[in-house]
Length: 175
Ligand code: 2AM
Image 1: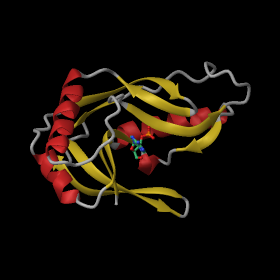
Image 2: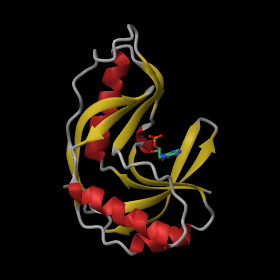
Image 3: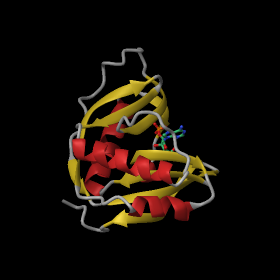
């Protein structure tokens, strides 16, 4: 199965991201827009791996304290358009420890530097090619209390993400 570790958002953040996505559409931006239920923040991408319990064990070794998630700006990786997060040393530190535990257990993961972002559009294109001419970035924040292990499956109409397990405290994230 294809696995990744992520923070899922509460409705307030999902509302802000969804509203922003619709504003972009109205402005003539086209591409593959991330469905609301697929919006998340990836902390580690594991890829094809058939031992989710080993991943959960690694996750359980690192205490996840509450972390503030604050939307901050937008940008592009090539034609992938993302919403960024305000830098948070606590989150960076958590990801470092988490990846260390994965490595200790021989769980494979993408070692690319952690650059926190929420993918909103793949194959981004706008009507006049002027990437700057977009609505001002969305705002919003939440306190994340939980980290999820997700599996990703290819569905008929795009990717389907399903939670396999989690660490932390569920249901405290409405701020
Ligand atoms: P992306 O949105 O920037 O593509 C599920 O694919 C999640 O894992 C996405 O959030 C994706 O980030 C992230 N991811 C990180 N590294 C990846 C990789 N090497 N291949 C596919 N997805 C990756």
